[in-house]
Amino acid sequence: MTMKVGYLGPQGSFTEVAAKAVMPDSERSSFPTIPSCMEAAAKQEVDIAVVPLENAIEGSVNMTLDYLIHKHELPITAEVTVPIEQHLLVHPGRDKNLDQITDVYSHPQAIAQCHEFIQRELPNASIHYTNSTSAAALEIQENPDRSAAAVANLLAAQTYGLTPAKQNIHDYGNNHTRFVLVSDSKKEPVLKEAKTHKTTMVITLPSDYSGALHQVLSAFSWRKLNLTKIESRPMKTGIGNYFFVIDVEKEMDEVLLPGVIAEVEALGCGVRVLGSYPCLLSSDIDNTNKKELSPK
Image (cartoon, one colour):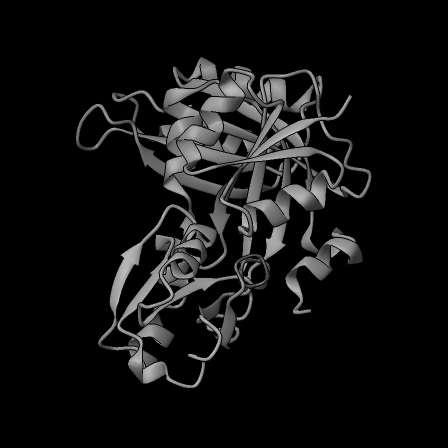
């Protein structure tokens, strides 16, 4: 039975590239926002939702984190990291006239990833935020009379008939994004190429316990468990109230991670596991899917 996959769209988004990389034979549906994509998975309208979680340049995608933590109990079932190459896309024939561009459209993270280029090359252009990079490309396609450009990938350029006026305009070369697959379904992709696993936890500290964070981290340290990420996020209950999102480079087992959870809970902390899942690295994406990012 074909797996139904929802992704942040429309077509041509980096999220679609991630979905294709992991599940090339799936039946894919695009959604206009991260919340609507995750809502579809929560209602089991799709088997899996693919959403961006973290970018190497701009950090966490807070919308995804907030919905994972506050809105839905959707387990993270897998992760795929995709190389991100941002390009300035325009209508054919406008690629020689950058000084005439008055408006730039893209997702807030993409704009931030290309901040220096935009400030240097398009200092007078107005910035317009969209729900995804592919939505920005669609906006340009549908308005050929505007002196506007989109920041998006080459798949979006191919999809919407646009021309890259400038390629690789992101400010830093090592630009990657982590995408996670979330699902309440029993259907899960088989990631044969995955070489590592992670477990993601949300830990809430007691308000009256001095040194609690140090002791929480010690529970991982003395067990020699490697933490690949620790991040504080507001609990949305008042100023100064935070929880911590922690990624552990280990899949859930029967001894070490349960031991951590028991020790941390004994300190009076709250612990919630968001998922224990295989991770597909960007270098593991096969050549067929990499061609999606190459000009034809």
